[in-house]
Length: 448
Image (cartoon, rainbow, N blue to C red):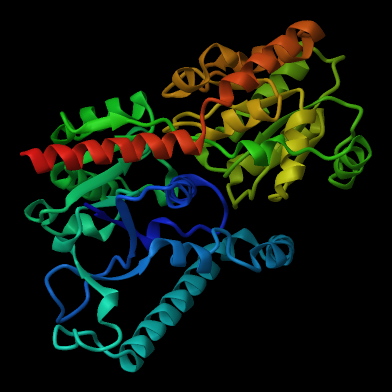
């Protein structure tokens, strides 16, 4: 008998291939491409439809939706550079005292446009009703009670606001990390919102997948309602993306075009520049290393959009006095892989993560990894990373020095072993484990 499994559209969109939505999309694409004959996957619109059957949704067959909705929105890369240039010009000519006023104005305009679009949509769109079951759109309505299971890849799904525990459909969630409970992330820190949604998911879900044992432990500790209904599925990473490299001549040109001297060794960071990623710790470690070894030449390369965080910008200026620091925008995959491959070390001393995919990407690109000894890092990286205390920049500096002084033979052995280790973390494996568990849960429910 075929099982109907619902997935939410909002979980599968992402401008950049990062984060929980990238993980969701990768797993779903693997599932959709596999020959699963006893499963029908449906892409659900998350919002409830007025005047329709209870807890009903718009839906599309998953394969059709995936074809018509690529992961990265077309045109993003085309406009990303001009937008960054505009931001840089604005910072040059507009005093910082006006930043809050400008941000508030932009926020108000965005809110007005969003509300206007909603109003236009309500006026022009016909409201679906339970009287329209015989028309041509009737196959696009499905009630939650008609599903065998649904998977919410993010805790912030609106579905957890509904009493799904009263439905026959298995409610399955995903949990990635408890960062809002462990760290203050500044202006975007919303522990109250996190508490609300994760508490509801922990209470109402029949099963919750966690991306590491560390994340599972946090979920149990902060949300005890989840006890007894979790399992761990390690995420994968895009192996083929990070195996691709440019030729030696193209590599040299790429580095020079970015202002990076191809002769001088450099340490690399790639990712979203958030307080917990500890960019300041990397820069302070670089300063410390330069003080310890003043005769050693090296550079720092940061790839990722750096927002207006004064602490990070001050640290960049201070570090630039002692050694070159290159803050670059996002780059194409093959360039990022090349930057990783040529780096002396990939430095990722995050203060907390749920899994830490960038470490695996660096291992696949054959780069030594320096990472935090907290959270899931030792669980995921094993003996193949150099560990540091993210709150002690001297500890980070010592591991950077170890990279610089490591003999070639030892480096080659470590890189080979690390790449083999990283190859075990695939999206195919994660997708298979998820579907096996869902099938077991469905079988258990039928027997019960």
